[in-house]
Length: 411
Image (cartoon, rainbow, N blue to C red):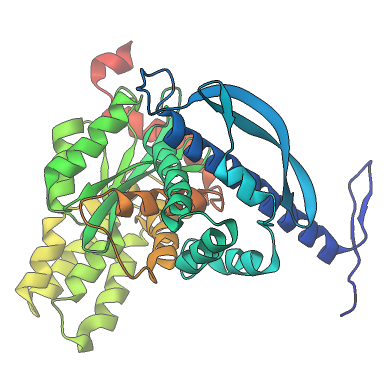
């Protein structure tokens, strides 16, 4: 294979990347090495906790005692890498860590392990990787698995424990994804700079308003402001709409997802009418002025009532809340993002791809929530600034003009 040469020029400081493929390989190796080092220290921590019990807790005679750490090394990619080896004592004598001894003769970045990691540790090859690691290390498979469990739990806690104080939000999207018989309700924030962030998630029934309410209240407890209204973009769940009304009252504008409502209406219509409904639906939500949009929506409802009353009732049920973004004067670029929960559904696609091959889900555990949290956390790394971000300042100002209480505006 021929080597491609790419030159990247900057105004004052030209930089030449001689070998793009070598650069990519180097970055991948660095990431793998960092991940392997985290795994090594997690193994040490797991064993020390099993031997010594929780830190700073009173311990019985069966427990060892922590004794600081010493410099050590493990093999990574055929080379020795420096680590801090925890010291454990019993009766004044050092106790050898089984995990450290095992790593003296096992390369975590050997070809077999790397191949499975590159194929996707978190989905298809999870069990295979555990077999490879536990067999090579001489450790129990359950001990190695605990390290992966801890990592995903940390990702979940990173999402559900974020401090939201100090953030200015333009919109908050809430939607759900179902897998393994469990509904995961997630919230995605879009700040006033157009950047997206997963704010929290809960597992439960999407038709249970208490689950949705619990998520919203948790966001408020972590600093989500209620004195600066922003747009709430919701899926079609009546329970979620009820929860929003209970937590925020009527002081925050609500945009019902046009994609959810479209799918719901189409489910009542004969296939022969799908194309015409979609044409009319796009026409409604493509209007620049709210008066024109309402007029077209009324025509659509009248057309539906002559074909299927349930479809007409479905559109009517939204009470015009699919037009909120248009009523607030959002630009065409912003409407593409804010008319639906598509940005959150796109992140859910990452959850599905990571979980579709898991064969067994453990009931009455946090497994589903952990996988969802870890997958959404990973998806965040690929988030981009939304289209029309430059128009958000005017949009947020319009939201607050219409929805801040009069006394707040006067102040």
